[in-house]
Image 1: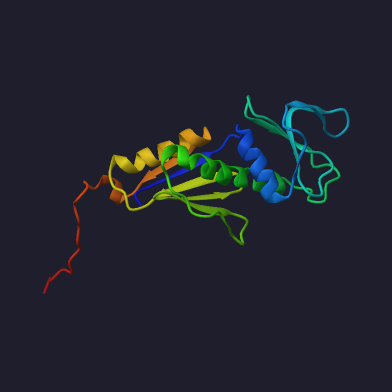
Image 2 (image 1 turned 60 degrees about the horizontal axis):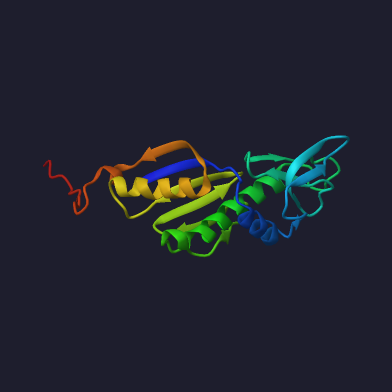
Length: 184
């Protein structure tokens, strides 16, 4: 792996919101932004997704890229359903956007630890707890950074950390072989 990034993803595409809701068995409460009730007199404006067991929906303002939710009275009682929704949204957005960029993708793999994995071209994408990690594989030099930048552009995400590995600094076509030393 030559280049690794961690990205904070912002939800902004209705197509992938619908796909993520469907994949999670959550209810999409309309496709037009409107006002929704949260606990008490709290209200939020946007598209609403109601995870199984939740009393109140997650309300997504796709223009402002803001999510609001209230876990009062829900069976889950945590933000877990929201982070899983966000993780699934990332995978659905990458799969839907791949053809536009001429990139082949694999199937979305749901892992036992709650994360998702997807092979996006030469980049392994992993989401967990609402964060995306990308590992560009088999590419050297600036080309690998371009692949991470494409993903960042597709998702409208913010890179929170970046690491260039040894392969990043190699020139294409160079092969380095470490030989055992004969110090005797």
